[in-house]
Image (tube, rainbow, N blue to C red; front, top):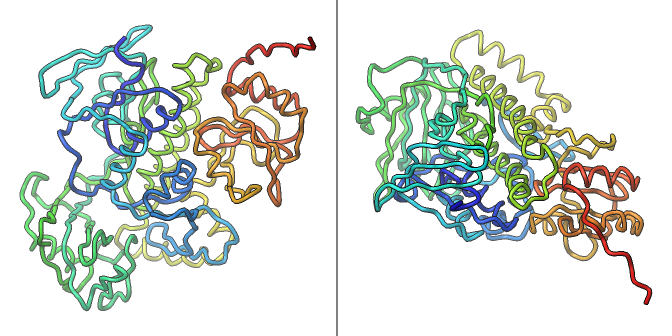
Length: 511
C-alpha cells in the first residue's frame, strides 16, 4: 500500500480535507491535475457557519490578520431580496471576503499540505481492501495504491465517473453568464469601500446580486478599483464558450442589464481581465451516493448548483470537516461500525437542501412581471422577524441538525456555540486541536471518570462559562454536539456510538 488516503483535487475542499486528516495524524497524498494554482478567482468569499468553522481551526485569524471572532452581518440577500438582520439577537450569517486563490494558499500552508501538481488521474479501480489509481505525471505514467480515495476534483469529477456514481439533476440552458475582471472608474465606483453608485439603481454594495427586468448584475472588489463583475441574461448567444469574448461584449451586456453605461476598462499591471462567457446555463446536480466502498466524494464532485447566495464553497468545506475525522478514525482503527457511512447520511441531505434553495433563488432572479409580483409579496413577508430568521438559518446552515441517536437535549446534533470559557479563552480556541472534546461545565468528577476509557481519543476540558447550556457537552471534531446533559449512562452511550469501544483502563494499585 503506497498511502492511506489519496485526495484528488487541490482546490479548497481537497485542501481542507487534507488539513483535517493531518490534524488527526494521517498524511494524505494530494494529486492536482493543473500544473499550478489557477490565477483567477472562482469564488470571492465564504458565508455562514463555515466562517465559524474556520475560526474553530485558527484559519479565520490567518485570513483576517486578527484574533477577533467572526461577527454576523446585519444585511444579506435571498434571491437579491434584502434580508435585514440587524434586529436579530443572534444569527449565524457570518461573511468572510477572501478570493479562492488566497484561501487555497492559506489552507496549503496551514497544515503543511504537500500537493503533487500536474498529476492527472486517468483511472480508478477498487478492490475489497484498497484502491488503485493510474496517474499521469510530469515524469510519466505511474500507479498508486491507497486504502481510500476521495474525489475533490469538481463537477466533472473523474473519480465520480470511474466509481460509477450517478449525477442526476437539471440544466437550465436558458441563461448566458458573462464575467470579467475589470477596472470600474470613479465617480461610479468608490474604490475605498468597493460600492458602486449606478444612475437609476442607486448605491450597490459588493458581494450582492441585483435584478432588473433585463437580467442580473453581481460584483465584488478584489483590489482597489479592480472588480470582478458578472452579468446573467436569459437567452442564448449563438456563440460557444470557446469563442473569444471582447470587453465590448461585457460592456454591452452591462448596458442591457443595468440600463446605463458602466464605465470600465481592462486592468493594467499584470492583472488579467479574465473575460469569460458561459452559454450552457445553470446546473443543479446531486450525486446518487457520497460513498461507494473505498471511494468518497466532497464538494463539487458531489453537488453543483448556482452560485447565488454563495452556498457552493461553504457546503464543500463543511463536507471536508465532516469526513476528515471519520476517515482518520477508520484508518487509525478505532471507528465504530458504520461511522464512515454517516458521512453520506449527514451531508447528502444538506446538499439537497442547498440545491433547493439555490434553485429557488435563481427563480426569483428571472425576468418578467409575474416574478416581479412574487418578489413584491416576498419582500412584504420578509419584514417579519420569524421569516427573516428562517431564511438566515437556511442561508447560513444554522438549521443543520444531525441525528446523533442520543437523548433529546436541544443542543444535540447542532453546532457547538462559541462560548466564553474561564480565563480569556473560548470554545473556538479549544477546538483547534481537531480532537473530540468533553466540556465539563459543572465539575462532574463522575462524568470525567466514565470518560476515562476514551481519553486516548477524547480530550476532557473542565471549565466554566457564564451560562452553560448543560452540565457537560460532548463535541465531535467537526464542531457538532454528540451529547449534552448530566446522565453518565447517556454519556457512555454517546462515547461508544461516535468514538468506538472503550480501552481497558488498569485498576489502581494500592501497593
